[in-house]
Length: 401
Image (cartoon, rainbow, N blue to C red; front, side, top):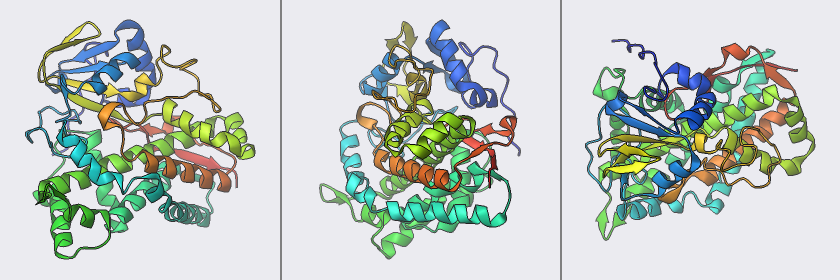
């Protein structure tokens, strides 16, 4: 059955829907309006959910593991049935003390030194994609679908020891889980992410390699091997959270450059500004909104949140709060003080931040080197993703070749 259209939103303060196309198209404007009129919005959709837009409220919730559980991090019409403290995708769905144990398994693979070892492969991927674009000889290209969306797919696939050719499957899984959670899009069990990963875990346990899945398959907690559910959930986290977030960051950065020739020229002529520019891209176009479930009745921003309610952690909205950042509504390419929340706050701060920064930096360096001048072919043709990760899904670019 085709997905039913999302009902129109009557009032973003009392009836918001972050999965609606209208939200995707104008999220920054919605956050700014809510911050001034209703800093903690509410909706009866999804069984009840809250949307704080001020930095102090987002930070408070992110750091409060007593009143807010990470058992569910993607808002749906139901509540997850995988019990605490592990959750269905450790460590991101794990509560203390299990969270620290689950997170420890990933630290070695995502350390700065380990990520340095993947830069050459990421750069080669970018150059291959650019060569394919140039070989077509066209003056217009969809930079989202032909460039940004392939880079993290290939890097994560290589890290996990999965076929790069499964990238199309990854994109389908991401769409179902992040952009239209709860929608009727799966026809059979064999089409699900769980089935795909169960198959891969079984294969790897029978034939270990030197990839991240094999590492997890040989891991243990106090002498007890990791459960298949733990391994599967962690792999799912890396595929879902490690791919869409980064391609959204890459795409948003190129979208910005396409419309700002002054910033584009500054990047091209002043390499020393690039580290600051990268952090400003992360602040201004932060892609990720996480979620928590209220574990105990609590009040935030004067709003009474009840046990079982969803709470969205809009890190992108927090990054544009004028109480937290000077000139928060401006993109400042050489911003010096930039303690943004693009990678989250609290115990769940993104373990893959080193990887994301590297991929974004390499993708931008290679693109800007190959195409110093470009612009949007049609601003109205840019399509933004719905759900909890925001970035351009379709973005036609006119190249100067």
